[in-house]
Length: 168
Image 1 (cartoon, rainbow, N blue to C red):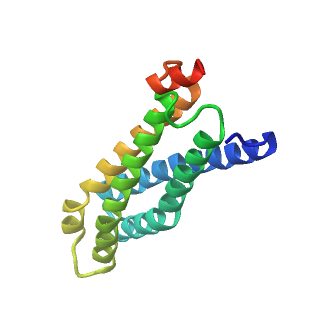
Image 2 (tube, one colour):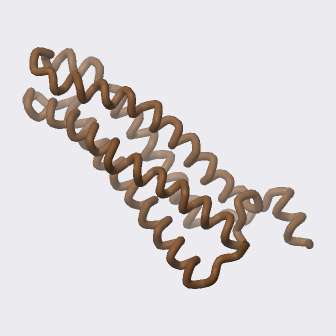
């Protein structure tokens, strides 16, 4: 099924917007994670973790899902196809894996938010638990930069299925 030009442009705009938004939100999250890990002020450390929880649930998760859905719509509704080009398939798989890791990490994120709200916990104890957000957001940022690079360069190699469809 091929989309009309107007619908394709709308879907492409939604996909680019959600994908770039996801990348930017993860970069902001990484800044909060580093601030939480290295901060000396207890209020700033706690605020960083509380802001990370809100950013994760209300910005990153929705943008991640929007990027996944709009990417699927774009691949199925255009001649690129989901299984015709390796770069499209690679982007889709990276997005799926990133989404699964994100959903697993949200449990940790919620737990860190609860701990940050507990003022009886020292910032040193909180910091000891907090290397995971830096690791996860750094890895997520790397994965999103790879998908962005694939989108820009669009390596021309086709899958076996794509070559077969091209000759039909």
